[in-house]
Amino acid sequence: MTQPINQSTNQLINYTLHLADNALILGQRNAEWTGHGPVLEQDIAISNIALDLIGQGRNLYQYAAKLINEATDRPINQPAKQPVTEDTLAYLRDSRDFKNCLLAELDKGDWARTVLRQFFFSNYQFWLYDAMKKSKDPTLAAVAEKSLKEVIYHLRWSAEWVIRLGDGTTESHQRIVNALHDLWPYTGELIANASYEKELARENIAVDLDLIKQPWLDKTSAVLQEATLELPPNQWMQSGGKEGRHTEHLDYILMEMQYLQRTYPGVEW
Image (tube, rainbow, N blue to C red; front, side):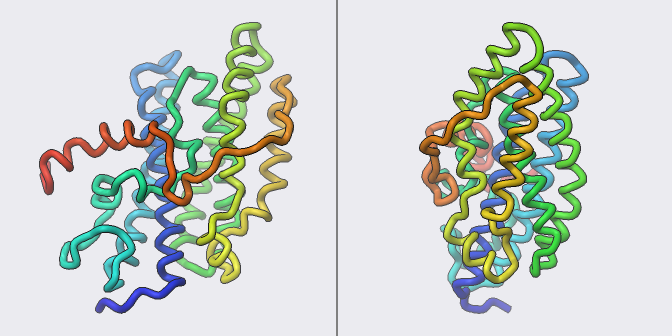
């Protein structure tokens, strides 16, 4: 039975979509390496990480769809009688409806850029999911507990690669330095609360990102130091992705990812 949506439910939908969009978009980016990795073993590794992230996104989209279908005034542009599914949330929303952090949508670049981004993101996910296991929302808590097992591997794998490149050859060091210079301005959004996160954190549903900011910085600093890299100075950070303001990179991702469903609506294999 549907019921009018209240502010708290709307925030929960936005928060769940934010988490799902983060995972899906970064998973899609990582999948671009499939068949193009530097060696076969790492090609498989980055492809498996992509699958893990897309799986996390799927679990979260299913929950968001359930919340939306139980509401009468839906927060996204969907026909009133058409049920929302994980597929409609992934394939039929425009870029302005996505709430992923900007870091996830940036172009994949070279291998150094890819592994450094994965390290920044996995470090964030580790502290996020570790805290979210205690969420008052049982579904979010269950997703966090399941996903954390995957994220622990993602974090270890990506950190090892950052250290390997930073403390490697002259060329590998320069590539990871370039990646750090390009990506660092996008990391602040990971650990900055959006409006819907602040409200849900007060209800012990979402994670207050202020509480994981220092652990994230400490881990980041330790890995960069071991990689013989310097933590960039404090600077202005890019933001807006959590509120639907994105770079042109997201449009290109969605153009490719959503092509089939938008060209042949409702098509099934």
